[in-house]
Image (tube, rainbow, N blue to C red; front, side, top):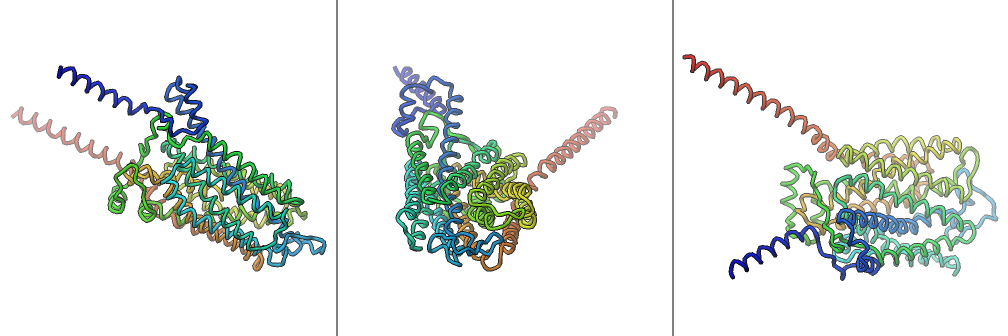
Length: 540
């Protein structure tokens, strides 16, 4: 009887260990759409590997479209700027002194660019502050609910801006208040979707996957430029309302189909750090600072700062995002107010030309991610692109007005080099550091680390457009472009220690191989000497 009992216990133990790899479907955690699919048994008949690939594709598509709508709603105002503050009072080469040119109060005055910069600052500053808390909140909540609330809030703020046209609102305080509201809700997006991607994908080829996936930024920018440009010239209120309607539709899809954890559908989570090579010195330092043992324990932002590489990448991101968002929010305005080949472009044409920057950003995101995978060195890849951006920004300013084809090429190449570093830091680097080996397997730090890096970067983004508006009004656009070059140079210098560390890791295998050969040679010589001694002793 006792033997039978022991046998049954042993069988149950073996069964439980086998079920560690095949997790049961947790129906109570699934969204309604996926719950129906699982209940119908559509995917249950598939091999677990094939099933996981299907869900990974679903997650990539959903998160891609999700953040595309985030960027769609935030980019709209950059196109509408040229309608709120037309070129009548501008100092650009396309300025129109006609008294019949009208903007929208209070932005149609001589200091209209400064007021528009204030709106950018209100949005970006609230976005940056809220980002620090969004990461912490996302790690402590259901990511699907978190994204749903954030998307609905972002759509509401865009609608409130669109309604100002139909309700004839001209109070600056109202615009600033809505921008603060929008920035707060928009901060919910990135920490949550980075955590989602890390839940579904391991570190293998993360740079390339994240680089391709990060093109949602540029896709949203293109849609946020082309769609609003249709309405911007006449009924600009619809520019915001259409973007809000699209975002509400995407919110419904996210709520119905987003699976936040592979274990909910009976799949095993990815294994991180299979190929991590962390210095012993860094590991010892991080082990002293981080005392994290539970896989479900969240960490504070203070502890996240001590993860190796977080501080350097955060500060570098501060300057890189300052430049990236200045281009994002001011490039259509800059193109419209400066002659290209002796001609001035209208609102739609300048918006369409600005999309070439976003197309270049797509190539830059994919290329930077692939380069970081090939080199197995994120800091080196980012630094190379930062240095390449400096001559491209200079060339765009000096030769961009020569003719239209050359201007399009230069805007495209500038997008490649400017967006590339920003995309790697905010996606692949954030995911790597959020699952860093020093966290000892903690899976609840991804959103916090992403929020910290993106929050510090967004602080720079908050100052960039404001400085751009004020500096272009008082010192001209030459001063703005020289500032951009200086900021990218400072960003590259901040990564020097990490670049040196990664280069040393490249050389370490060579030294190891040489030392192994030397050890083998010494061992061979010692064996030869021992053999000769034995032969001598035998002869004697």
